[in-house]
Amino acid sequence: MKRVIPLFILIATLVAAPAWADAPKIAGQYKVIGDLNNLKNAKQIELIEFFNYSCGHCYNFLKASKRLHEKFKGKLLHKKQPIYWGQQTPYPAMAYYISDEQGVEEKFTQTLFDTNFQLEVNIFQPRVISMLSKDFGIQDAMTEGMQSPRIRNKVQESLQRAKQYDVQETPTLIINDTLKVTPSLTGGDVEKMTDNLIVIFESLLNQ
Image (tube, rainbow, N blue to C red; front, side):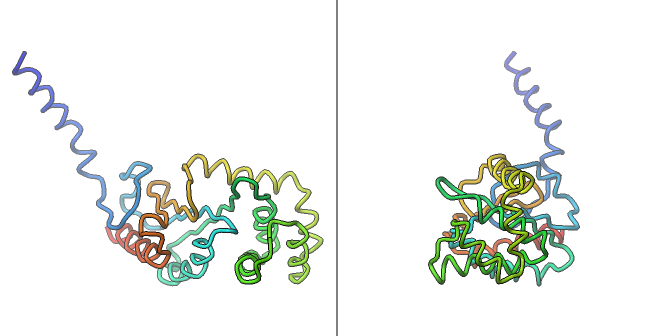
């Protein structure tokens, strides 16, 4: 029996080794949340970003992420998922989807962040969002959208996906449904986090 057990272990190791050995070695700092083999020969980066409008790191990443779009133009698919915490209202997250349907999401998101951080106005109040939407000429669409079950469902879907990926901080970034990156991995420095994402993306695309 003493010889059989080591032999069994050796055989099991040899059988399991190929799948582990063939997994791509991706540079950078991240948490593995899926099968690394799914990253083999990746031709495109699919980035899911969970963000919150009261999050300073998210505000900084709004600008920093432009580096990613410039460097990986045509190879980066960046999807945003707005979420909210605790006693916050869902209105900014709803406004994200409404403004996206109206074709002004990027500018409206920037305005919401600026209003919160530079003007220190509580953007979780619906009247504030309504006033801002008037400047974009989408006030009627915003008012209608805030009453829409479809828009509320989209926000709920974002929250459910956040639970699925165990989102504990924002922004939380999911890469090709396999790697998770957060600011805490780089000491809370968003610029370093963005540099880290560049390292990961280049490693993925240059396998």
